[in-house]
Length: 206
Image (cartoon, rainbow, N blue to C red):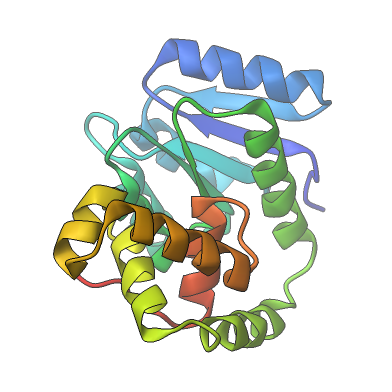
């Protein structure tokens, strides 16, 4: 029987491991932390089911490779990736390969807690994916061609100024389109927008 409150933290930064462990344990989660992805992978066959929070950039084996190794070995640990500035394309790739969310540094406590809760909920029930995909696709269909172009820029991790340059429009116009995209997709954060876009079948460019 899976431990519904079990969370694994994998990060080579000791300060991050300690702060995440303290945050989660204060909310009654059971936490085990690992400094290296390779150490977690070695222990995975003996671990009970739980949510995995891992940095995307680590020495020896990064978060993406850890995710691929876990998938290859059919281990089910719903994954949340922690990303630094400029790592959005990596995070999008990770979500394409099955991660449930990404959190950008510096992260807010409530963002981590909400994502962990979602990860544990996924362990508790396997259904709902088809319904989410259909709903996300319906929302995507509401976007105008220009809004889709702005969305593609966001999925590529581009700042508003770069999107504006690529589309030959002003940064202010990008901001307006971005707000409309978030509203039409029903997304409150960039990570939620990425998750909904992938669920709808939108493939990021490049």
